[in-house]
Image (cartoon, rainbow, N blue to C red):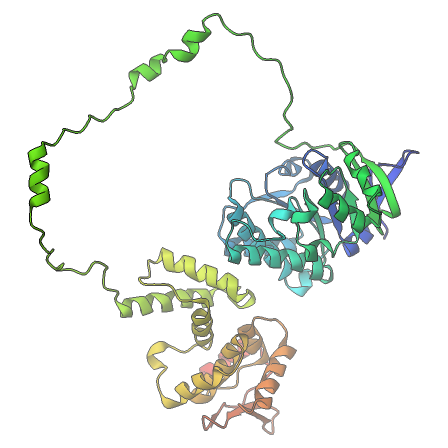
Length: 503
């Protein structure tokens, strides 16, 4: 179904500027314009016209688009939450197809980047059954996909840039259509801007931005001068969803308004006659609370200073107690194991990236006041793989388990948990984990991928897979001299629980 929305008037004839919404969902849009060029007005017009036809998600760094909720029913999500909460909220938004405004107002630059990355990551990692079309609008995109490093940490920049790259490069197959707006093309990462096929270029003055805008529109450098003469709300459009040739358009009116408006000139108030008393004399309230002034220090006699200088030096006695508290390693390990167990028990933990889980781990450690330095990311991945295998630290001893840990070090980090899960079943003589259990340990819903993992382990010479006369799977570990009990690979979680109870 072809749906065209009215963006305003186009060309000198004043014809309607129609935007093909279905084509926009497939080809994405880049909006560029200096501050005051009408860029936010354009986004508001696009959102209002397309609201009845497609689900929308707005990444709003200044809180300008929260008024859409009053007119069109958008849910306003305050970003002052943990990253794990934002990721789960984004997944539920895709599931229930609710239009939303992520309000980042009140957060500093680094917090905005982390919150946007977590929210976009949750939408990107949604289950395949929930890949409905979503128009994802990111205002001030240069904040979330900067072309160069700034004052924020490298980790926050990588998280945000990775989420924006996924949105623009790989989001189409997941139903995500990126619409990004920026004040400066030169400050926007090129790999993010290059994925857009539709462009709306507004007023700009810097030569480097005009040159990039002209290159994107297929214009020569002399024609780039026209971007300086564009009025507020006037843009040059190009793209399969707009026009096959550069077309000047004027954005139409909108139904809602932003909370913040451009400053307007207004006359100064008449100066009162007692202006000097009004400014220079303190008020009654100020008189009631006079500023506190510290008394000047008492001068030290010269004789006391000389006596202190001639006093012989002496060594300080060694402190009876250490300067830093002694860390109880048992308490630290217990706290780490408790936090890891909480993360594993979260049903959504298996489908989130290690970076997101690591941030959740650090926050939980601070909440529980786990002493000592936190685990580094490589050590956390290793401990997480062991925890996913379901091995209790007190029972993890033995030569077989130590050998299994050594063998797992030759595998990539994301495969170690699956291998240790199989190794634990073999050491304990338990039934072979089902494809569903292996897929969950790998962080996917695909059971075929779980079958390929066992085949990969077999190619590496770590396991040997066979089936009994009933078609049940057995996985043998030559280096451990043990094998799993036969089990149906297609069994669901309920069947696995029943088999374990029977054993």
